[in-house]
Length: 184
Image 1 (tube, one colour):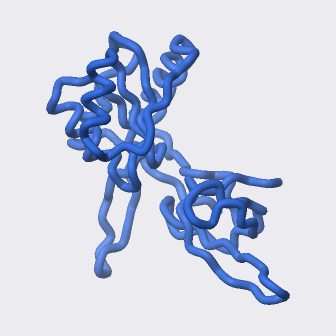
Image 2 (cartoon, one colour):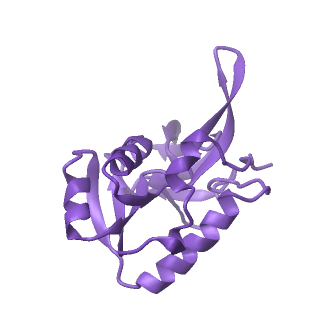
Image 3 (cartoon, one colour):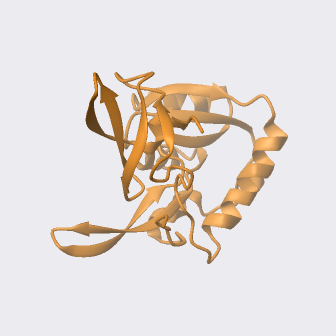
C-alpha cells in the first residue's frame, strides 16, 4: 500500500501560501541542488522575489519519535515568478543546478493553481505513487545514469530501494525517487 502524505499548511508553508495564479511576472523552474528547496525559497522570499514551493506533511521517525515534517512535493524544484533580474538573483544563491525557461506560461500557471489547491486541501497526497514494489525503473541522473532495476521497497517519500542484477547476482541500491523513471 502506498504511503500517503497529509496536507501541508503550516509555518513553512508561508513560502507557498500565496496562490501562484496571483503572481505577476514570467515563470522559471529552478532546479536546485539536493535538499536545497526550502533554503532557496527562503532566500528568494527574503529578497522579495515571488516563488512557489508546494510542501506536504509527512510523518517521519527520528530517534524513535514520530514527527511531522514538511517536504517538497517536487523534490529538487522551486518555481520563481519574476523577471530576468530575479532569475539572476536566484542563480547568485549558488544553490541551483539549472534554471529552466517555461515556454507555455499559461499552462504552467493553470497547473500551479491546481497544485496549490491540492496541497492546501484536506486530502492526503502520495509522493511518487507509481514507484511501487515490482515496478521496473531506470536511473535518470547521478553517477548511475542508465542503470535499470526493479523497486524492492519504499522507505517514505525520499528513498526507494532498487534491485539491480549483475552477472547473476543482485545488488540493492538506495536512491531518491526523483532520480528514477518508470519503464513499465
